[in-house]
Image (cartoon, rainbow, N blue to C red; front, side, top):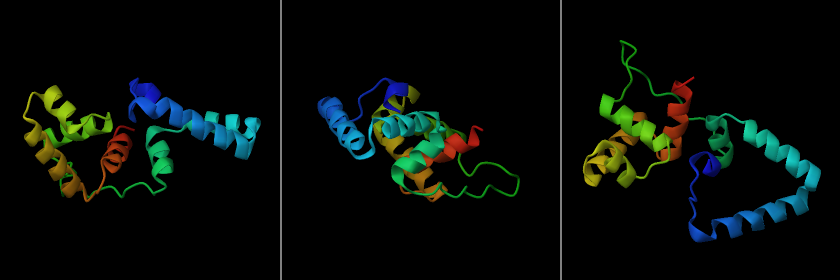
Length: 131
């Protein structure tokens, strides 16, 4: 994810911590097994990678209305897509030219309507709908 978005999600110490964890993983698995596992992970679809990272099953798809429509309003769907892109609420507000508090509300409503407790679950749900 970090490479695809070209961002550092964990602040200035991200590279140090990443290298530390890679070293410990290579030590535990050996170089060949680590490389194989890393390459397999790179090929995972986004939704599966998030599931693996969170060690949770994919969220159940929220039920659509009788007409098959999404449970979200158009604006909530836009917000969900931006959440899936990794934007913060402030980033969502800037992208949609709305107040941050409005973005906060849209994210809260989206989580509630979908029955989710995390932004990662929204990302998995959006990823699944894009197939």
